[in-house]
Length: 121
Image (cartoon, rainbow, N blue to C red; front, top):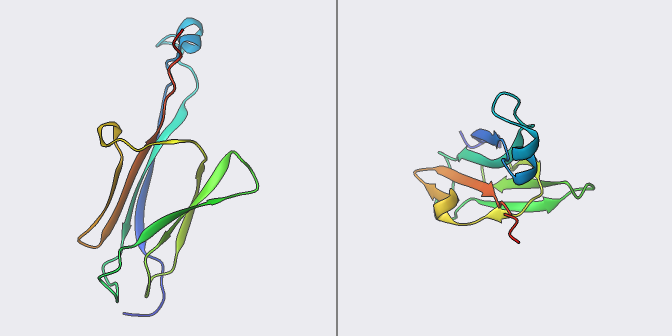
């Protein structure tokens, strides 16, 4: 029960169309623009933590490419760290726009979307 192992996890990439002014003039709903990554959802399960007072955390680490970064989830013993390669863009940390970072009942939940910059003259 307490040998080192990887935690179970679910992750989802949120993708969709970016209907900015360029895409609105060059595409329509019959011929849509290419999909872009708009955010991520991570659920990491830590049911058998030895030290239940320590909250599992996530860390962002750079890669060789400026386009990507690595998100590493660290829960403590008996779990090993798990890492994912994600797009390196600014997060929208507003709860109103879908940001959620909680640890309850043995589940670390991290939901975030990327910021959208609207052009205004």
